[in-house]
Length: 343
Image (cartoon, rainbow, N blue to C red; front, side, top):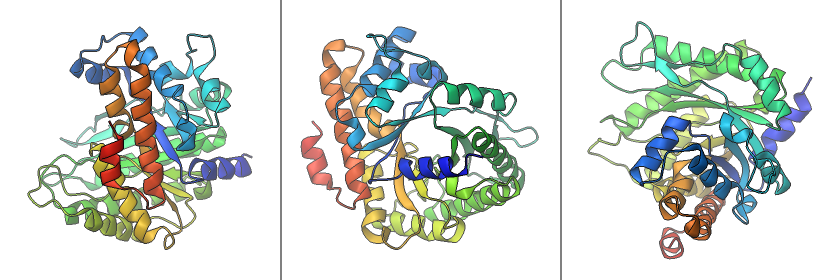
């Protein structure tokens, strides 16, 4: 019923070398980040921060869509304008996080499955009425001794596919996010194996649930060595491994691959995305985009620190980081220029 609409929205999300801004932190996650910076952990400050993001001048030059949290999609600015309208009026497509978080997977110590399918059909209908045009669901895969297990791959892939089918039924483009976590000592080669297997499982389930691949966006991790791995490959080696992995596992029908930052520094996330586009942009069937949270937001949050007087400086930092990633989509990101202009 929504086939053409889904295809158009999915393509719009990765058009014009733009990408997504994930501003969908749950309240506990938001408070954790606030606590580190001495920001009061209240609804008032959560809203002030999200209003700062949504009203950043020129953000739409680099950002095509913003992923919101349930609290945020219902809020209005201090001038009484719904945040959704603020985004839409400047050409940013509103989206919504709909999963209920990763919980322990029964019978699989050390592994998780994302919950939130119960009642999802009705919630998606409401979110569409509130203005959302796409949704996000994050699954997490841990690499460790004997992990991940086949049961973990299967449970998360099935949940992602069920979610995606329900989204498309409601006219929302599903952002399909199977994240292989960076935590651990695993090598880049091990991350390659796990990422390929995770993505293969996801697409097998998407096929079975009759999800329109032209109407989704894949939001995966880059292929990276674990944070504690003694060998940390170069930016170019990460780009090569990531593209090789995805050429094996991601169907050409998918319009865009919007990478998550997953705990990478802002600069490394941009540099790695840049390397992929500089070398492979014209050689792969899908757009190589971004869907970053901390890698765009963190410098702005640190500058703002809960002080209204710092809003303009924080918005400037947010605009700069978003622009860096648009440059990276064009293969034009320059780390030296980034360092000089980021202050």
